[in-house]
Image (cartoon, rainbow, N blue to C red; front, side, top):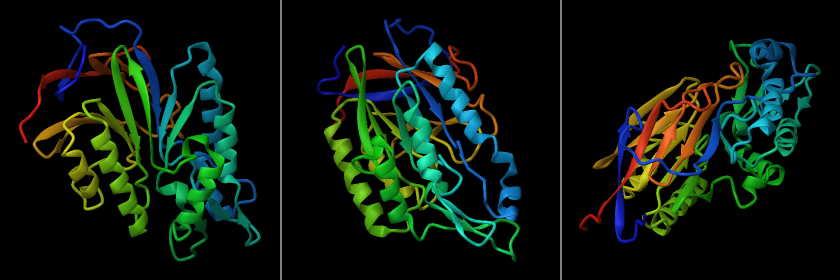
Length: 307
């Protein structure tokens, strides 16, 4: 099967009926919102507000420990990897080391782990006596992104990046975006230029876009949607942030794309979604049910559209 001089149109199917079987699919696992936190020494008011996340690190470690029995090709975690870069301490000090803790955990995993940054991954929290929750600031986002680049191999060339995987004769291109904090206009615009270049270079290869905050009708999503609207070969969008499961069809210009959200992992370690890539389709599993197929996206080769 070749996609030379062809474009891809996408169809969301309720099942895989009628599609030809493909040998040796590539399976990866989608996880999001792991919210790992080391609350030792953190100010009591912050620790209390984060009590529901105190098992997040143990949940993630247990997840990695079980992968060896049936390893996927890789794991993709779409943001809010940690609950915060740092927290005000009980003595007014700063409790950091959260990025380093997470990096050590994924380094011990048995398979490659690809990461996207979320809003919590560039937030630093202090006590706010006048508010019901800690005050977060992303004023140091540039420095925190640099720390992530030093800590995680997938960020070696930057916190937005691309990688490829093959299923049969089909090359899937993954575009991992950093949309958790876009207040730095120069950073955001550089990322959009990079995305445009990646879309052009992809040719007819199906694209899988991974990011933390789902694409919606908000102004923050507009630049991404405008760029992807010029790429009818976008096969799938993977996101998190909303802490809930959804498989939805979103509009990109004159075509649609399937966007998959997976629920928060930190408080529900069953929130793991298996996704299988075939030469002619993508099978999306239900969370907590590896081997299931909740929806299928079929890749159809059609004549190139006139410009």
